[in-house]
Amino acid sequence: MPFKSAEFVSAVFRPRVAFVPVPDMAAWFEGVPEFCCRGLTLAEVDFAEAMAQGNRQRLRQAASLPIQEMPISSALKVEYVAIALVPPIQYDAAFKLSEIYPVEFNQVFLQIAELTGAGQNYVKP
Image (cartoon, rainbow, N blue to C red; front, side):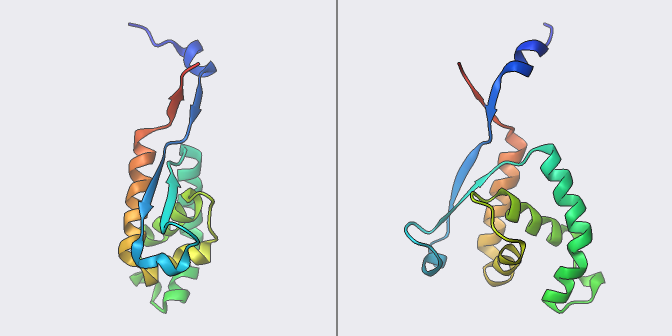
């Protein structure tokens, strides 16, 4: 069966979103302590990878680690979280979140990765 490319191109899609509860961070929220996050597009994933390469040095300095001890995967996770939270947060806040609340940070990152892998939601007319 052929792909309906014209229909696909004209269809409307919206990013998938999910909420990640973070009860241990309640002091830092007004209302329900949860992060709203969304999936990323391919362009955003590529942007995050490029930024992670450049920000690895900045992360190393903030964490007081030799650059060889700062995995690129850590820098990439910080970029994903900064971009994919709704609303987005500043890079410095995403990094501090990874340092102070590493479990919650990783839960948010994993949710973003899952949403990204699932693609966007088709909005039926």
